[in-house]
Amino acid sequence: MKRITLLTLLALLVIGLALFAGACGEDENGNGGNGGDIYSGVADEDLLQTLFVDALCDAAWSCTGDSHTVADLSRGLAGRYASVEECKSGIAEDGGIEVEDLSVSIEAGRLVLDRQHSGACKDDIVSQFCTVGFSGEEPSSCMQLVAGQVEEGGYCLDSSECAGDSWCRFDEECYGTCEELPGNCGDETCSADEFCDFEFVDGEFEDFCSPRATEGEACDYSEQCLHSLYCSPLSETCIPIEVKSAGEACHILNHFCEPGYRCEIEELDPLGDLEGECTPMGQAGETCHLDFECAAGLFCQQEVPGDITEGGTCRAPLSAGEECEDDNQCEGYCGFDPDICYDYIADGDACEFSYQCESYTCDDGVCFSREAEACEIPED
Figure (spheres, helix red, strand yellow):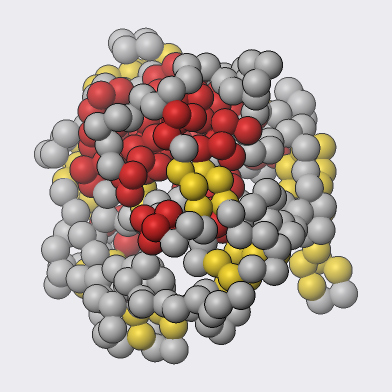
């Protein structure tokens, strides 16, 4: 099954731990929501993953109708669990969201983890998801939770080690250098009411910030719309987010069902009405048309490969050697020529592409992980 990492989740995020973004509901001290260490039973190395998963699931069950970011994450990941509790335990057990192990950085003094800010940071992330998606600046609560100690020009293993707004830039070495964080859109930094657009100029792509579309305006995808709107695949315009409750009628492309439910239709006919009813997520053996109609950990195997109109069945990921169409169908990854599932390649073994590796990093034909590598940082 394809892994969800902070990198892939959020290709939407400008990754690094500096991306616990969004400053909402802060008090006069710059802290939001509940203060204190709310994860006293969680080890330091597991704290950030636990915090991020909790925030993601809490947002899905509290504000799916307020933000297209949360609506999409709910339908694609968090809402495929039956409850918020199952969401939190399920994603954690599946190892579905991977966060860098910061224990080495903490021991070396390049990073200070102040757990008293964990509650405020988690609340700020939920608030950010619910209002401005992945836009916004890093809240002070999260900066206080994970405080980098390396100044610009110093050596680092992860962006979380860098002080202030700087990030860790890697070149050829296993370590990087803390440098000023570039804009989140080329040389620009987009506001919450803008998205990062691009154009082709003189043979190259150039990024620039563009205003988000309002209700009724044209769009190609939801990120182009204001956060409270959703880009309808049918009208190709920004429309209000509609979340339907269990048992209510729904449109598979224009509506979202509440977390734990799917819009179940009898026939996926492009010329039909595409309307159905919000029912519990599909379990193994139940009918489906799309992956997000199946419960977490399952995918929709089409009756006719490549043809979603005929429908299929929810089933567990395929084992190595079974035929596949994409990575989401495999326990490992889907190869080509032949198109079968393969086990992930361990660190130190030969590879061609990063998606083949357990570490998701293929460098010079070999899988490797920065975390597993014994990296010695030069003395300043």
